Length: 93
Image 1 (spheres, rainbow, N blue to C red):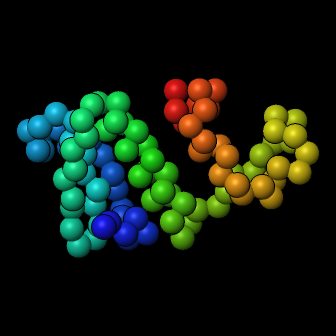
Image 2 (image 1 turned 30 degrees about the horizontal axis):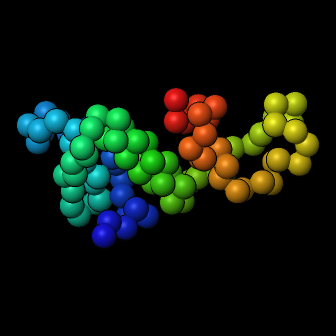
């Protein structure tokens, strides 16, 4: 198991590993090479792990929502709904 709170980077590693659909997750002590079945799965893993690294970061602060775009009262909403796998969600398009 990889402790994402200790991770520093996640990125494609096709050239490094000389295999398609590979990516690496790095910690200060170790780099893990991982492989997905498809390029889409690889991109999904990189995106999701990257967001998890950011959320675990000590400098992460939930973004402030503009009330005219998201409605009143959303500033303190931390339900992470912006990460839902919805076809209208820009993170997953």
